[in-house]
Length: 299
Ligand SMILES: Nc1nc2c(ncn2[C@@H]2O[C@H](COP(=O)(O)OP(=O)(O)OP(=O)(O)O)[C@@H](O)[C@H]2O)c(=O)[nH]1
Ligand SMILES: [Mg+2]
Ligand SMILES: [Mg+2]
Image (cartoon, rainbow, N blue to C red; front, side, top):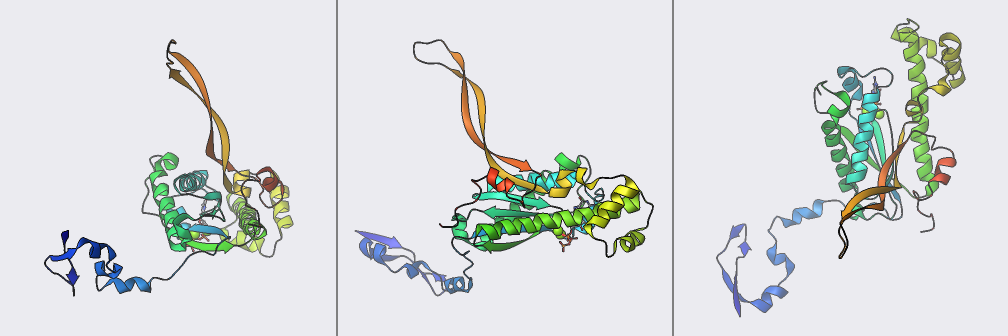
């Protein structure tokens, strides 16, 4: 049996060449390639090391300006924080293998399970999918949080990939981000209290806080403004942790069995849902209560 095939030669398309079908199936794979194909070899291999947790951290680009322009409340804007969490929620639902995400301020970290083989563990694929899903969600859900307030320009988020080879390293990474949240929030809370309630200028408030320790900041809040930092919002102090949780969901279905009347039947299904927490993740308690997040170190 003979079959016609169009072959490309030196950038042009040559007319049909008649070849036996057997040869077509055994022909070298490079027969179908153009002379430009070699440029593929310039791509670098960015496969993430096996057995490591893959963390993608996003951070808003120039959000100092974005917050000013969109009149975010100081020091924390619950609409902005809600929108960040909603966008992270969408990332977890749309992309595979993310076991936990942690966010504060204009950043969110996404942890892929250590055995993930999503996109063959290619760092650039994982990072760009997370960044683009997050950015488009931020714009998509803007109205849900900011109502009629106009989004003045398209926000963007940078991304980076970091690998953590052990559960200890991963927990320490997340602890680092939550400690950062606490340090910044305590500073910002005192700073803006001094300005908004104490009548100081921003320069005076900065001077007042130079060299102060956490205890000093707590004391300023308590003795001068009757604010107990411990009772401030957990969302602001601890940030947001998103994890998957199984929930039983009961729906009523109308069923018709043979030789029976049609009737309503309750059907219970176990569904995975993204759940938000604003709790401490530095100590052991959170990890003891959610043992399914981490995989064994001896895998
Ligand atoms: N008012 C207000 N500002 C916020 C809030 N969340 C984030 N921001 C702003 O976003 C900034 C985030 O800090 P960074 O990520 O270090 O700085 P950046 O301006 O985004 O700069 P790059 O990340 O380097 O591009 C904060 O310094 C605040 O100015 C909020 O809830 N309220
Ligand atoms: Mg930023
Ligand atoms: Mg930031």
